Image 1 (cartoon, one colour):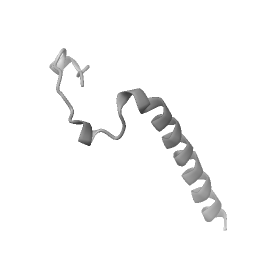
Image 2 (cartoon, one colour):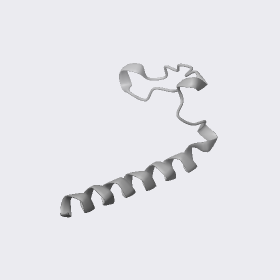
Image 3 (tube, one colour):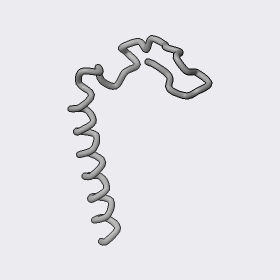
Image 4 (cartoon, one colour):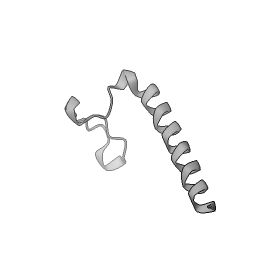
Length: 51
């Protein structure tokens, strides 16, 4: 992981794989699923509010 903030510019730290939600090469599929779940839960929440 590389930090972008000025105060930590250039600093890098290793993140253990067990702490990651997904491996980097799988990030696009994970982000797509997260977006779909977010949209679904927003629609369900809106529908529950209407009733």
